[in-house]
Image (cartoon, rainbow over all chains, first blue to last red; front, top):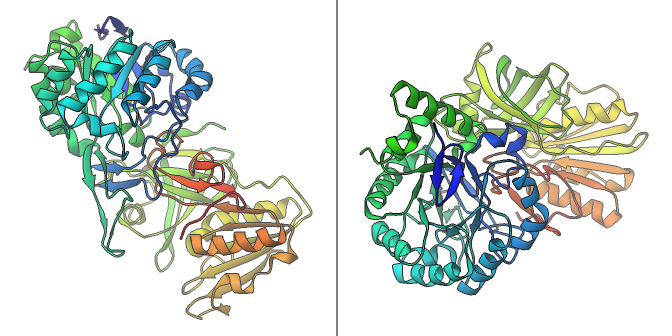
Length: 298
Length: 247
């Protein structure tokens, strides 16, 4: 009943663990059976390993948090050699989140991932925490079209593009991605934000700005998912502050065919299970026979 | 050992000193000295869980010593015995105590004393001689609960007890075969450097803001000679020689 098909890939349910909040699944596999998940997005991967940002990387806010990890990751080759076999054994859909600091690095990474056995690639043009690349490609449609066009040539697997809520116009951005070969859209990544240490009289983060996530962003993320879903004809995966099954149902009703759960994994490690069960119970009680019946009802 | 995530019963939550509290919860585990737990009050107005290191553990319970510093710890201090608290752990590595019959020094600063009490007791169980150095800003706390076989050295920056000044001023690493420390980074940096000069093994327990507590989110990293390491998963205890500590 909760199964959903996205870009030709079957998901047993519409709940996916979001990139950057779930590592490669190892740590959460101690908390519960990850085969119950619809899918897992890997930590953001780049062709070259990255050490990430120095200084404070996390700051709590009212109903959320700001992070400045800066895409720390072991590099795609290391992921393929050391982590993918474990992820593939989890019996859930594996989505590799691909980032880069230049178009060339994106393409090199895309080529490697395309020849691996990941199920899908999520092109991350929305990380606000790196100086080069990342979100720089996700603000203006022209830059997004450039990187997507090149990556598309290197990727035969399903390719979804993860959008930044900081894009100049989120709907234009989604439409541009559809025109330039995206098989699907996921949104939203974190909001560019900041915090100040008033005693030190300095920004908390070395990069000054960082990415806001958590329940505080949900209403804005939901609005963006709604608007984008109305404008494109490719599948939309919704995320942004989803903290319970009711939030997930809202995103699906707004037009998402699946949802990603991010920051709430930190608050309750098995939150995805609660959301999966909650969606199913809601569907039974309200006589929905499939996700597609519930999708875009608004 | 894998962590567990559950709602635990608070057995005790009392004031120990001015802004220092001890909370004891029901939790069955084999927790090692240096490990920590993530705690959160259900429906808490603060968002993230808080990492608290283990002050004492037996097979049935875990105790935490914590300082009220912000909103999260303030909420903890208002909880009552009988209330439930969300708790995940034990997390992180632990102090390496796989030696016996050694001269060891345990050095803490402020609330960094929390994991060191349990550590000192365990070191003693393994027939090590233990000297306990604890520095405080003002009045000392929890210095009287250690086994009588442990020699305690106290300092207070305000001069209200023991040595008037910093704990590092009365510590000489040459007298020891193993050193372990937890406290403010500037203090641990001095201890680690002193030990490095004399080539004495020094284990350092780091503290950092955390989100997941289990190694997935990478927000609690610290700098080491081998790159950025996760305090929650690769630590919190690191080899003093490898850490690059910035004040």
